[in-house]
Image (cartoon, rainbow, N blue to C red; front, side, top):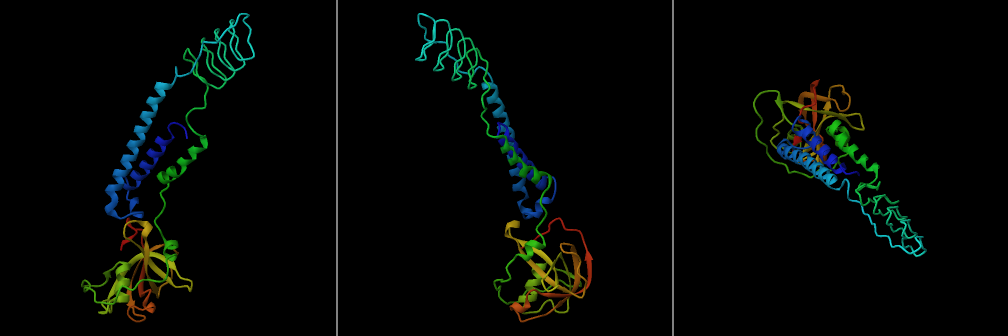
Length: 301
């Protein structure tokens, strides 16, 4: 990558982080809300580091831009002023075969400079300060393609995880243990997260969901048997540790997959407490309403 490549990459990544964390709520697609300050600080630090690298690189270019070439003006001469086979120079300043410079300032074969300032063949500079062509300190130009992922993150932030991620989760779940749960708030319908609804439906020995109208919000997924689910992804820290919570919906036509909906209905008990037959829980729908994706698409586990 060329001189300013590292600076550009640092600045782009930092700008992308700031875009999703400081200037929008997009960071909620990837991490919990409490991590926002860390993202802002990290993004700002990367941008400042990119600027610092660019300034240092520019200063180094100014110091070595010209006058850094190598030259020699000390060709060894002989009496008849002709070049000889052992590579030593001659009195009239003509170049020699081993590439050493000469007194008159003609270039030599290995590209080293000469006393008069003519450049050599390999691009090294010369005594009077004219720089040779060189290859530059950078690597191949194809390395600039490394900026494409950073640009993509800056311009097109990836969406939140959806049905594909939910359907990839293994079917087995560790038993949490059957027990009693705190009483639900008074009034119907009661808003529950998919995680809480599932826990109460499968493990609550007090059957706190019985006779209550619940309201669940999530995105639509489908099972292989045609059943559809209202689903939500649960995270502890970030999207990398996401697991799914879902409820099978009965009595309503399935919206398109990944559509966000609010389902209002009642719990339909199935299977014994803590058994595989009790999972996933079932809700008999009274209404299904399409809603926009919330700013925070994940539930906290």
